[in-house]
Image 1 (spheres, rainbow over the protein chains, first blue to last red):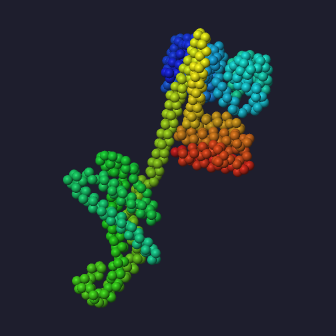
Image 2 (cartoon, chains in turn red, orange):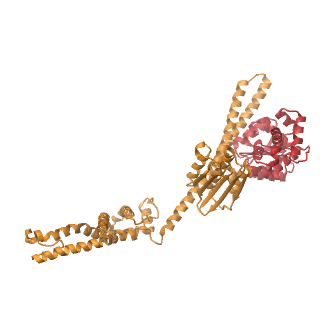
Length: 212
Length: 415
């Protein structure tokens, strides 16, 4: 898998390169600011871009804008955005352009290599990876239909919203695949959503529902 | 009548004190002016100006004690250093010349009035009693206190009578004399009418706005230093430790060694670094919530209201430009208050109102819960108060048992 990194902090950039190279990925370029990143994306046409949200010059949302721009340049590019903190507006702006092959993680999740690589693979395969914090923030909002869900169903919904598939959810919750499917059918019924098999559409549905 | 006269006498005597100081300053000025002719005096001007201000301030204090409002008129505190800078600052300030005019007036008129008022009672006593002991005086001393020759007894009687009459007139006029003595000070030691207090107020407002802006810039700098510096370094540590752990795992697999000790140490290092990152994020959020920079106060507050566990409505006017530190405080107040509502009130709904009244930002958070909130219960109200008061704001908590609870906060926000 070919990867381009955009990260302005030299130490962290080197750490990411080291980590990904060590795991057998091919890091074709590592840029320190948006323009260099976009040039690298145009030149190398990588499979995945790993992008820090805060980059020069203003250190606000350059990374989000660069990620959106990069996906215009290379339409099937998967983007995994790393953020110093969870900002709903960032996630929303990122997802507005489509949820296929998009991920949004807190920076420190990178340290949990298994989860980070899992998210990377999911995004590269055209799926979605959302940080649990993003989901947790969405869940603090009160929505009347949400009250109808059982505690277990909410757990399942949260994992679904993170972008996990049924098997992964079953492993996390230590239940059978069939059990998870049963919960999901029940969630969709309670939330008046039509069930589908596509992971990303489930996430989109969940996110859109929660944001409404 | 007599009480007024005694009070007037006291004032005149006090005025005599500053008049003596003023006359000393006046004499010094004359010396300095003379020395200026040979150049040396020029160096003495700045310290003389400072001395003049000190004496003028003494008179201001005295006048204020007697009920005249005489506020300090100087444009700036005396911070200039170096002869040219101090001269320029003094020349720019109209109060300098008004001080000098006051010195001249008070050193003459004020001194005369003070001396007359203090000496006259003694002289009256002497002249009025003169008929009793006039004959005992040697001939060359046979004069009144006012230097009139006394040669005949009727003249002595007339002089005694005149002294009493003059004293009575003086007593009647005493309060007017005191007012006359105070007049130059009241007129000249105040700020010039064209300057007025509005300029002082404008200056103080500008200073406050400047301080708030500087504070905002400082908050941004700290936030940036934490997010882009410390946090990135820590995440780099987390990632590097992760790389080491993976390498260690591969090593263990290929050599068949257990290597449990190093792995446990690396796990611990990773855990500690991850916790530090999370804590740092919390610290940054309390210093400058990132959402404020992105969406402004209204946007940030509507996010808070939307995220509230108790259904919460938001009523916010167009708030315009506010200093960032005021926005941060308002945000913190609402966030804390809504947390309290969720934790303690048992309320079914809450309301956040924010509006701006000129130079005040008013934030009201109310709920329909059980009330009885107090600052003693470790409910975060104490934290709210401390942050509000740090901004010279006012917090009012109304929470009778049985509810409802209202927290009202007023924050000065410049204009």
